[in-house]
Length: 392
Ligand code: FAD
Ligand code: DHB
Image 1 (cartoon, rainbow, N blue to C red):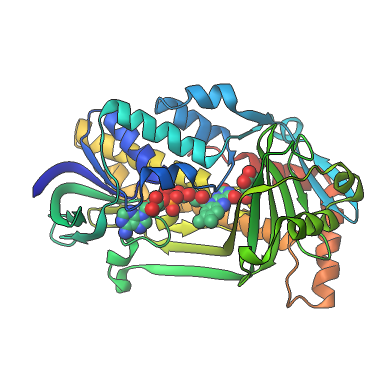
Image 2 (tube, helix red, strand yellow):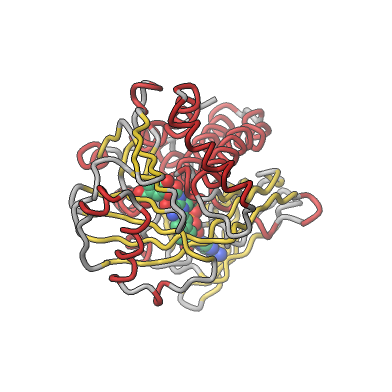
């Protein structure tokens, strides 16, 4: 069957569904193609920390009501090393706070809004492929229920994440890749226990990094740095809790409440940028174009910023025929992307144990942590980046 739309969106994760929402509110016709089932997306546990700019954008998109009711606002964050914790006063240093609200909740709010608005979101879309990118007649082909479909589009938004097909559809000679793969991953556990602390703890230890975060005051999320090839199945709950206790300061370990895990998974750490983020009538947004290691909590927030800029550009085109924002899209996103890349890479270097680090590098890392907690200027720099840079 042949369909038509103005903007064809590949991927129904946070980027794709938020873009669909912002365009839909302006009367721009969209179709979203997502390969997974709604149930899978609603249960997918990933990020948890939203910058104020992301909260504002979700609110503008009309999906901020439950977020406003249920979110936790954090005005500080703790950095732990050498058995002690040090608070970074985000609010005092920057005037800003951050929001804790799970990505799965953002995903559910977006899906519910689309279901209510009647947006065409096609789940379980198989074999999605992009065509006509170079002859100005873009179209998407895919299968649903074994049947071939085609959608003619004015533009395509590639919001299909790191492993998606959109970036792959750009000829190799016009795209430049910058990448660093870290020799470790994060093992994450979700559990219905009271969080060990009311603010996040980023812990650097001889045994590796650990992060204590949360989804609510009754649901905790913890992460451990593990080797890149680690299998979550090799980490029964007792092993996980035991290792976490050894990596966080003794007073936190004593206060830690443990319980059965309700989710456990390993994610490889990677820094990745594909430039430019546009090829003809195809625009990449979110993880399809860039990946940051999760240490700085920037992945989802960067995706939201891309989507804001892309929505602005497409709306300017449809409302007033302007093409300048589309032409400037990639450069505008990449400015922000590289700032977040630098910060995420720096936070990862500061807090993780690198297996190949020399004794000199280990001492320099310890000195950097000590400097950070002794210098208000250094803490201000960290805090400014952590709470999120202004939208420009
Ligand atoms: P995605 O969320 O990846 O969404 C892409 C969507 O496209 C998916 O729904 C996928 O099913 C769909 N798709 C893929 N291929 C196709 C195709 N061929 N056809 C149709 N649909 C397709 N960030 C943080 O800030 N903190 C964290 O703790 C954190 N943890 C993470 C853990 C993991 C395991 C991963 C993978 C990411 C994590 N991130 C984290 C990053 C954050 O979750 C992402 O930045 C965010 O999900 C980006 O949203 P997106 O919509 O751009 O991409
Ligand atoms: C969470 C994840 C992060 O990577 C981070 O830096 C902060 C919070 C989270 O899952 O809550």
